Image 1 (cartoon, rainbow, N blue to C red):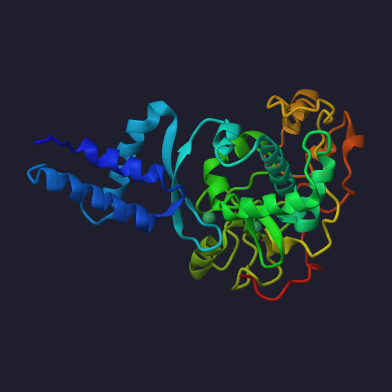
Image 2 (cartoon, protein in one colour):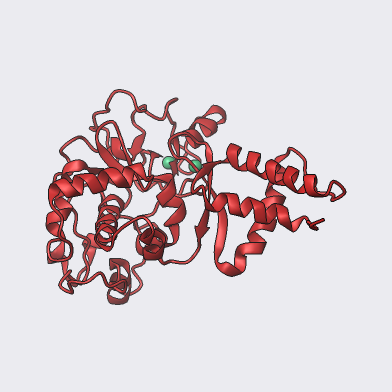
Length: 343
Ligand SMILES: [Zn+2]
Ligand SMILES: [Zn+2]
């Protein structure tokens, strides 16, 4: 008889995860249980610690991650920003996004995808989203680097969505998907540290949710995190201003596509950086924050966020943004007209 051990549960589990990509916590737990059963069928005398509790699950995850740690892999969870449901994926912890994308994309598509991510991460007003028009316009901006017609670009965008790398909203705006936030997190954190926002409650990356309306207040929350918080608290945990009941109520400020009206971002954003003259996809093209740090000394305001890149003294002419209201400390946007419901 083949001898099996507790380690086989992990092996079976990882094998199943490799073939699945992003999956729900519920499914991951069900597969875990199946793996235990499979091992117990081989040898019913093996004692496999299992209880149907969060604690037991966490211990299992910790053990799995200890096992794959040396490979720079991690079985990692993230909350879906729209539903609050927990998702998991086996992710590469190294900052080599090209390797992550290479199985799904051609080199041109990778360049295009990264340009889309850049537009999303540097979008105005913490809107972390991009209109179809600007997304297609990127193709023109990338002329010389990639050769893609708008029709081809439309198809490529659709495949980004179909494969779960981008989300497309009812309004037709693109934003980062849970898959991208999970699997490309090292790249996004490494490249867009200044733009990245974190939820005050769950400390995970935030691209959709609410911002406190007080100027310079740094509180940001996912919808579901806000909901849970608001049930017990009536005021902002930082500046103590009273908050309305619902995340969609004024004067709370939306983070994500509701932060922009249609047509408000008809222009693409150019991050201040050594211009794109080196026509290749050189990974070493440093993002602006590195420049600004070295050039403008200690001005590394910890909550700089956007607007920072447009303040680079050295070569401000690169910037095409009109001076808008997305400088540090997002201001009240009371004039902001709300759209009906969010979805
Ligand atoms: Zn949160
Ligand atoms: Zn506040």
